[in-house]
Image 1 (tube, rainbow, N blue to C red):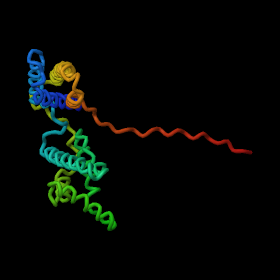
Image 2: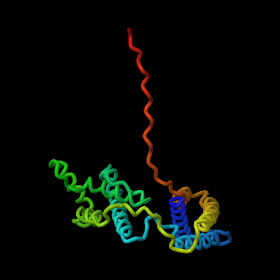
Image 3: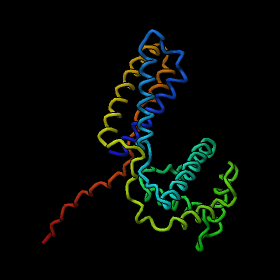
Image 4: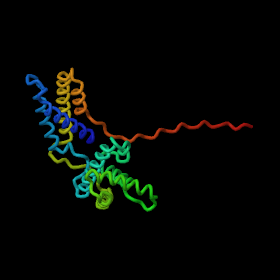
Length: 237
């Protein structure tokens, strides 16, 4: 439920950014400006209640995890941009799902496996890792990137004890937050009706609104298919 609320809040925020950037397209005689105001107020309350925060606790250890998460996110953004000229580069550095501390640590270790020299690496592997590091350095990351990541992981230590849910920053209950999200969804849908009318003859703007207002899906790990049992062969006598 927490992750779903975060994704809904992300949609509210993107919808507000789009609506404010394109406010001149909303007829002043319509209720659109009012919908934007109400959605903005709802989003402000959700932020104050901590409903937009990732489920990482606010202990010192988890503050370190949040810092690591932010660095991984920057690296994934660089990898995605570089992939436009070096196809597949982003495959080695997929964006972290952000959903729990364990996922952040697994992503960091996966990145390091692609960057940090290992004792058994041959010359070609060592060169390939150095080239990957240089890509990030060329895009404003420090030359000490590998050592920095290793130091961050060492500082975090074990992830045990970091799975506790974040405490609410505000005083709203889970039920009240859910009600706010439902109200926000109504306002976003009303804005959707406005923009679909306004941009009926402008498919590019309509597509931009649809992209801004849609709700992302929670990442999930695909389960391996159950193998089909092989029929037993009857021995020929």
